[in-house]
Amino acid sequence: MVSAIGAGLASCTDEFDNHYNQSVESTGKLDITCMEYLQQNSDFSDFVTLIKDAGYETLLSSPQMYTVWAPSNDALNEVMKNRNNAEYIKNNPAYIKNIVANHIALFSYSTSSLQRRAVKMKNGKIHVFANENGGYTIGEQKLVNVGEFISQGVNNGVIYRIDADVVPYKFNILEYIGETAGLDSLKKYLYAYNDSVLDKSLSVEIGTDGNGDPVYDTIWKQENIILDKIADINVEDSIYQAAILVNNDAWIKSYEKIKAGFNFDKIANMYSDQEADSLSSYHAMYNILANNIFRTLPENITSMTSEKDSIFSTIKSSFTAPARLFGSNIIHQEQISNGTVYVTDSLPFTNEETWQPKITLSAGRTSYGYDLVQIPSPVAGQDDIETSSVAVTSYNYTITNNNGETEARFGAYITLTSLKYYPQPPRIKYYIPDVRSGKYNIYAKFRPSAMPNKLGFNLTYFEDGKKKFVEELADDSQSTIIVNKNFIYDPAENETGKILVLENFEFPYCDLLSTTSDYEKSNVKVTFDIISTVTRSERNTYSKDFHLDYIIFEPVE
Image (cartoon, rainbow, N blue to C red; front, side):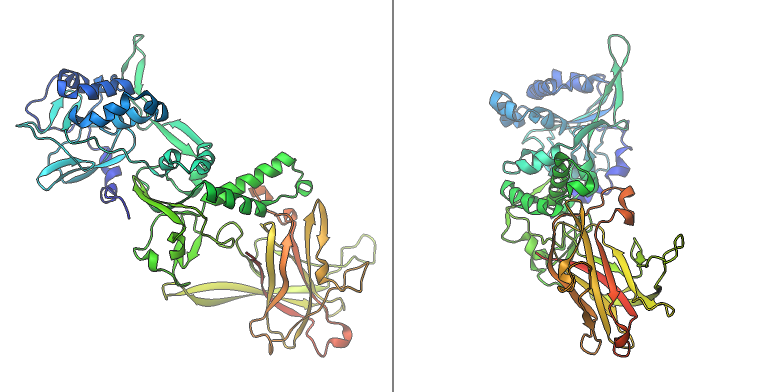
């Protein structure tokens, strides 16, 4: 799927700086500039007109070395028709500049010992300059060998002639988004973050103005803070074998669905209505695109239907049975300058694969740690009383990956033990970060104790600025205090140790930590407590201590 130029890209960067002042084959180097040569040759009169339209006349008259693959008048018939069509130029304002810059490269490129060479053109496009099958080509367009003429050397470079057609201007992925009908929503989102920045490394002095001040061949490069996080789809030598682009219908459907997962509690976060809505919109739009770009694809992608098959996007999102991503949802496929685009009318991903990931906390390895729940001291001024202690046990295990290979993994469970001198049952609190507004199945996974466990759970979250607990986990007979319902974990009956605590529980608001300073447990608004509910009379039946391995918040579609 990679463009034919991909084979020459690896050498592009290394060779790009090695062509200044190279020798050229010609009938004799002329002591004139590229611009003067073209102006003196009537076969290039239309190209001269386009050069002046594009503002490159001064450029090609400067001392800086350039290579020009000049289309003859015959090759420019269609281009000149478009150029003389005012309505066409109005709708395609960059058309002429793109065509001209697609035939000019900084530095002098020789045909001496030429086989295949990747050349970066003035517009940033990369074309292969080649000597194959007994002829020279640039971007797959043949160069003309008229009599003894192969190339003409001048005092600021070399000129080659093209007769058949212009070198085609192919969009990169970002340009394709900007120029293709039906992708307006995606264009509006991405182009809002475009910023033109001076490329100091490629901007060179080409002369002086009337005041003697230097004049530069100014090269601008586009930067985009969203693409910095996802993929360089605006960079010609960054090749992506698949970019799944949503059309306007898919954008609207996906936007509303994903935005609902980023509903921020304005009161708890002290946001204005505008701030909360702006954050929701930002995360929704980002997640419509973020998971859709793939650097590489297996050749057999359309037959990869097994859950053991997987591919990874540029931001490391994993997709199993990936053939479904390139099925009937794809309404158009096209190879362009830096990859292949797939236009889709529906986003083919699940919540869990993208914007609502499963939250799995290793009990002994969580980033936020945990709190042992204490009781107030009966003596004023003294510290609260610890009622339990915790020990962490690390362990190793292996998994078999999608390639059938064995991989090592590491885990850690905690053992919560009641202190002998105090009869209060052990209780531990965990902080659950980055919960989305939406539904989850919530599990706790245990390791066996000497006897079965009798357990309670408590889930707290914020709603409209107020801390709430989940009433489904409390004993209905209690109205003023929380008495937790009992869950029995008996290893003889539950081999996995996995307990479903809450099914289809819906969080009204997300609790997304957005900045580095947010990543402290005091800022996490969702907490999950595990409590041993064993009474004194039950200690011969149940173990008051327990071994907690994982807490899992699994999204519900």
